[in-house]
Length: 419
Ligand code: LLP
Image 1 (cartoon, rainbow, N blue to C red):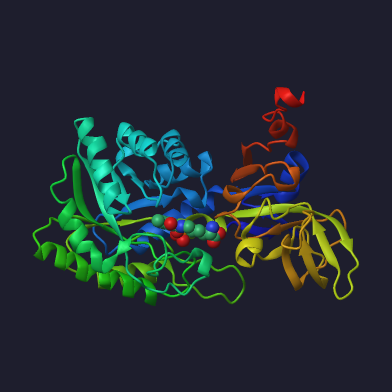
Image 2 (cartoon, protein in one colour):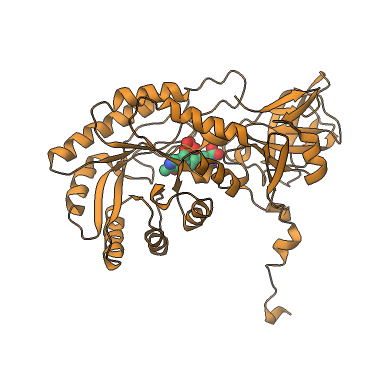
């Protein structure tokens, strides 16, 4: 459920007409509904109702906008971060350092230092050497770093190959069969409190079976580690829950997920940690765009919109589907290709799609663009960096400025030998 709906024949975000945002801020622009974000944060939390004291860390990469993070901080979420940049954002948004979890396969020593200096709660280490480096850095500060070991369970998440992370050949985590030996070698490392394990097998999962299979393997590993004398107090179950992108998409609900977690983890006696991203913010955002032209095509017309693959990369990268809906639909339909202005054919949002009939100048949205949308934007083709707006009831605020191409140009220079 989201808060983008027709009122008096025109799409609103909560109580704000999208046409007003387009007129005042311009297009393309991302629009987020605060009420939807808050609701999803609550729905995910209540889905885990049977889990005692879950630790919820929003996966910042899904939507790192400062205002979005602030909403989630207020909803009691910590942050799952993967870079020094995300650390700075989570702290700036007011997330408690102790509720920040640092994931990522390539944390630099500088980033680990910054995380220790900030007093973050946990580092999810990806390899044995990282555990030793982290321990040494913490010991040099006279501290002990809390860490868990990310394990690769060799489970096929059944999602797009580019967002699968839990197969043995993927770069993430240590092979699950090597985890006990690595644990044993890292145990007692000065400065390191290795207290559990972490897992994340992929994103946009449309069934629970792969997650359940992976969690069961983790349960067996926890028992084995305890049998070897290790104190296991924390297990991070990652993120990955899918969201519906198109009519007919069936995905597990947070309640279904929570019930599965409660069943599989029964008796583990650990603090369970979660890193949801898309399920919190996906449906809370749309990309608002204006039709530049409806260009006749050989088979179907090309609806050329002012948003492009640099603003929303998912269709080009993962062949992802985003519903396209007119802001003020007439009721008429057309079959068309939808594309942006960027000069490559990858800049196509949809092919031969049945859509609301649109004409030059009309406004439309790409739905379910709140996750992995603005955060993956670039300035390819020397386009501006797309702005972001947050709506709260009948008011809205620009929460990220459009960064003009001229501003980006001003950070470049010609070397003196070419002057
Ligand atoms: N935890 C870890 C360690 C992750 O790598 C990710 C996502 C998450 C949590 C959050 O996963 P979620 O709940 O959002 O599925 N750009 C791609 C998605 C990449 C996901 C990367 N990792 C897309 O647009 O589909």
